Image 1 (cartoon, rainbow, N blue to C red):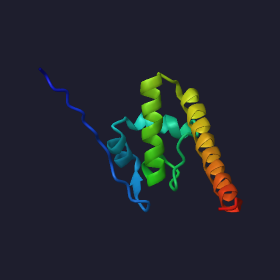
Image 2 (image 1 turned 135 degrees about the horizontal axis):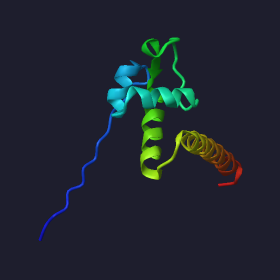
Image 3 (image 1 turned 120 degrees about the horizontal axis):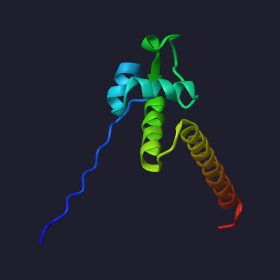
Image 4 (image 1 turned 120 degrees about the vertical axis):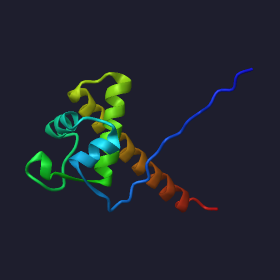
Length: 112
């Protein structure tokens, strides 16, 4: 009988991480051109720099870029679809956070 092997990969990102576009391409396994298009579409927002060679991205942007590229690949989305999907996922996460906070408030008011 043949055993299957599950492989899990991950990158631990420091919240204070700041990377260049070249470093972001390595972390994401993507081309600089694709990431430039994601910036142009508003999916990614560099922290600093006017030209692509001067751009700097934080750890949140790295996670967002990896998520965007995964969506593009898995769902075969174009850039606009990727931006929309990320916006909807962000909104869903925000709503879930608000729901958890409301549930905690309600639980705190109920007599034990």
